[in-house]
Length: 394
Image (tube, rainbow, N blue to C red; front, side, top):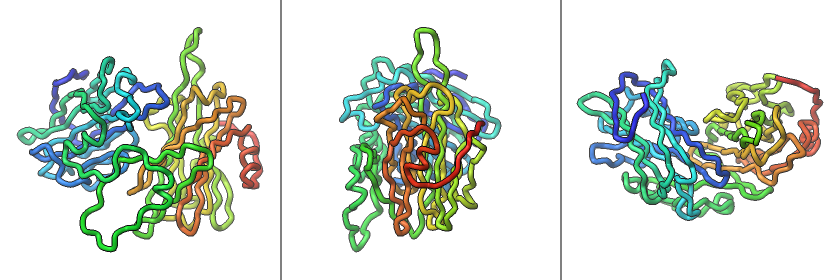
């Protein structure tokens, strides 16, 4: 069913995926999904009921966020939560003087998570919209029945004022944290007098050589999710160019000296719960997947890993990194999201070493590389991995 603004439908499925999609082709524009779990007063009960890029896992109440997809189990929603509000915001849209008119179109897609069947879609043209936040839709409880309503309401201001509208206590605002803020955090108070406030900040490793260090939380690192997303490229005068197949992978070295790679080429997808404790989710052949490609590192076993070099390479299509508009995001529990753009393009080369993860006394040091090479062997030699390579295919 195609919904229009204000229209609602009853929901029979209880396990849902709610996707907030967009047709953004502007490299400098970043769009973030968010979800607010509201009580009858249209306020959150506590800050954890705000699900966004720095707070993605609320499995205890049946909700998780993966890139642009919310997975919702309505049977786990607490009785005092009567409304789930879904929104899209532009990262630092106000300070960058950006708005949703630059996006052209956004949409909300509701699917039955058990069958994969599409229940409803809500496409929204954003031409003329000067706002930097959009309240796309809501799930709400009425007389014991969950329903979905399409909204498409523009909101003046970005993520911070929107979150405050629903009662979220904000710590760090929307502006990106600097690298130095993360390397040398302010000293913690001796006595915690109140719950920590949420940070709406992201960290962007802007220049080659920029690095940050992630310390353990509660003596452990959580799962590290490295996401690669890109676009196919622009339409030429003679039709669409051949889709770029951009692959995510990594070289790794374990503490016991084992050195290998994880990548789709050669079906070397790795393993999350056994060595190398690194796994690739799948292979996006076109760049059209909303989720892109995800490389996961089991942070609980980080002490067994020495270093990981994350790379991307063009398996098919012309090597045009600028049109691919590729970027990676790095997400770990209770840490700000980290982003790395694949900039300083070199279209004569088919491979890019993106970031180096190093084990430094248990901490995770992440350094931006964006180093373009002609294939695996050249990258291997540049970073002294010392492996033997031969041609392969999917």
